[in-house]
Amino acid sequence: MEEIQTVVVPPISTEEPTSKSDPLEQTLKEKEAEIAALKQKEVELQKQKEHWREKYERDITSQKLPEPAPSEDEELYSDEGKKLKGEISTLGDKLRDVERRESRREAETEFPVLKDKKEEFDAFLEDEENKRLSIKKAAKLFLAEKNLLVQETPERKGLEAPTGGGQKPPEGKPTDEEIENIRKTDFRKYEKLIRERKI
Image (cartoon, rainbow, N blue to C red; front, side, top):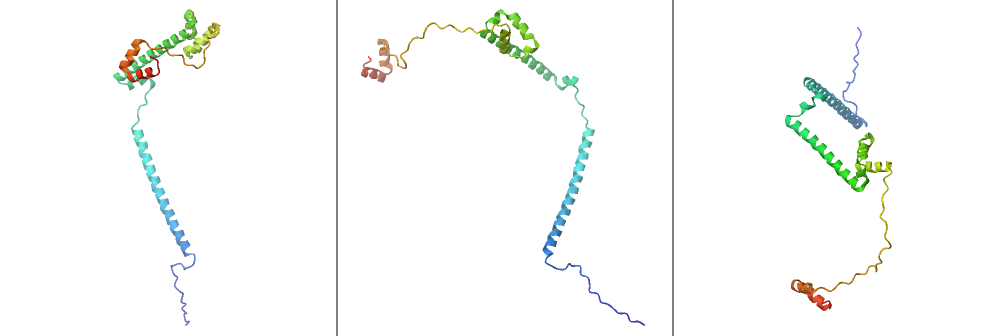
């Protein structure tokens, strides 16, 4: 019979051999663990995001709101709202009318020729291009087209009166009544006038 030889094999250790690269390998393992944890968090967040998106879509589709049609504009306001809306638009129209009349009055004051050409000016203002202009600009344009925009400059009458420059004109002497009034009301001023020999 043959003899069986036993070969003794050293046990395989599960521990990695210690070497100089051990701290690097440990940091690498830690980083891999952090990456795995972050990936797990990302998966969980994605699931939550999908859950909330689906819930939002369910809520929106279950609560379909009717879109207001332009013809249903009156249904949006209560009776008081409709009344106030009407009053506001009426007041707005009145305000625009008052402003237009006031600016017309100012233009007629500045350009008196417009009073004589009132009907022509009204027709000029009704033109589509001229409606957008302010009354003053429209008046200038109207007068320029009619060749009436000549501004009259007042004529100078001779030379101006000569002046003595920046001299102060002499003050007149106060009357007896003024002196009596100053003496009763402002005695210091009265004494000053006496010292300056103005009385």
